[in-house]
Amino acid sequence: MAATIWTGYLTFGLISMPVRLFSGARPQRVSFHMLHRKDHVRVKQQLVCPEEERPVERNEIVKGYEFRKGEYVIVEPEEIKKIEPKTAKAMEILEFVKQEEIDPVYFESSYYLAPEDAAKKPYTLLVRALKATGYVGIAKLAMHNREYTAFLRPYENGFMLHTMYYQNEIREAPDFGTDNANLKESEVKVAHQLIEALAAEWDPSKYYDTFEANLKKLIQARMYGKEVVSIDKPKPHAAPTDLMEALKQSLAQMEGKKKGPQRVEAAQQAAEVQIRSGQKSASGRKKPPRRAA
Image 1: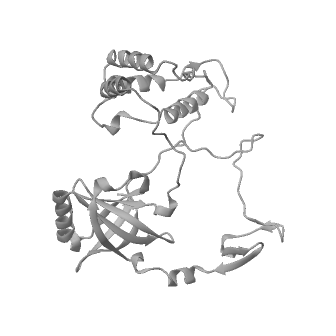
Image 2: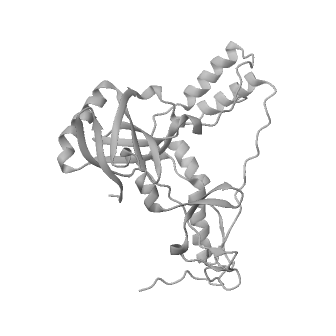
Image 3: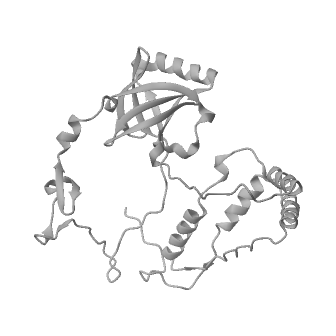
């Protein structure tokens, strides 16, 4: 289980239960170190005071808010702790709403909300009640120097919590999209057929990061002193001059393909990079480095 990032109490009405929060998702990326090109030694990042022209240690640093150009209010960690709201330790459910009423644009990060032993009965009761009614909880909690509005929904046998953006954080796009394209009914009908041709059951295991897979193959190739051949990129299609004809051709193409697994297989094949042998790696090795015993 992942490390706990918040502990406190979940409350609704007069019921209070001890709970803990830990991350429900995290990105997986190939990570690179920054090296000096000349000798392949890792470079170091330092915090430097330009006034004294010297590196500064972490214990010498304070937080400051710039209220005027070049003028700061210094804020100490103890002062921030003094003003923590009650939601720093108590997550109160403010109301229950229907899940479909909330636009996904508000969702930020996902967490598992687990009960402590003393809270298992009320926790299970709330999970079952929300599953039966179709409601989700809206709560507030404070962590990492920020108070969040949280979306609490049943997930498997427990709760998944999603922190949410506030309304003033959602960017407006007044010129986004259009509603006056003068579409024909026949065009809309074929578009519906095209959507149905691509329809499938949601299965997240079918999808993966092709770029990540290619990066791993690139690294493997370089370890063996080989070179990766560039992947041909598809050329963008020009905007159709005859929308109906483009829709019909797309529909015919989609109907000639199988759904689901074939699309995944095609994606996996697209991730296969071609390797060219006979090239030395950046380190001049023909063989991969030995692992330490």
